[in-house]
Length: 303
Figure 1 (cartoon, rainbow, N blue to C red):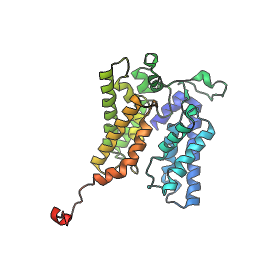
Figure 2: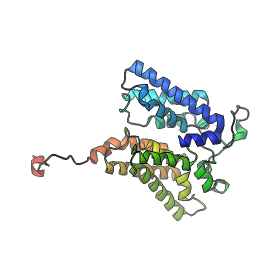
Figure 3: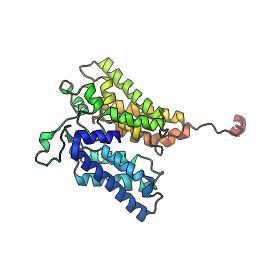
């Protein structure tokens, strides 16, 4: 909610429109899927509401209405209910929708509204009020053109998706989840620390003329959003402490490598989805000790 509030402040009615439509569409597809597919769940459990908010935060404020509706369809029906409904999906639904939309309509998904535009934007005025994100400029090799300071990145005075601004607001929401024990610390901390180290090594070895500072990577893009609110999804992340550490390390490593050497400016979504796919294997290899049982001797197990 703090991140959403800040995005409404910077992006005005366009962000309100996108977020509202995302939530309504996700709730509608959830209701339809529950009725038609008879999968477990109910609108009262709030899961569709959360997915709608997260999908909205992964969209640019200027996303056309039909793009938002398609994203909601992919998230709720394809990524969630076709896998069995609540608690049985293997990928984060909002991230599946984001990646699908990014691959299918890359131009629409990378049209970024400049902060401070409060009203609705017409198609004729769109070019005048949009610009590149800091990560986009970095990927294009235009490091010298990045005017955003660390303060701008921290407070949110930059372009990007609705949930990619204001690391401060996202951190505030993440801390609330930690204090209330909704999530545990290892995934967000290890995820962000690994990305920091990987990008820091590139900056140190390759030089500041070619690579941005690790602080830039920590505060820009969807890293804080992904680390606190998406990678920590209890359905698609490992069950054990050690498993969550390995999962978070993989997310951070892949995010850093994609940002540094990949074709896309941002790697958080791809990294989390790839590690979602690895979660069953991580759970299998890193089972917690079962208390109240006696281990069988190795010789007996071999027989």
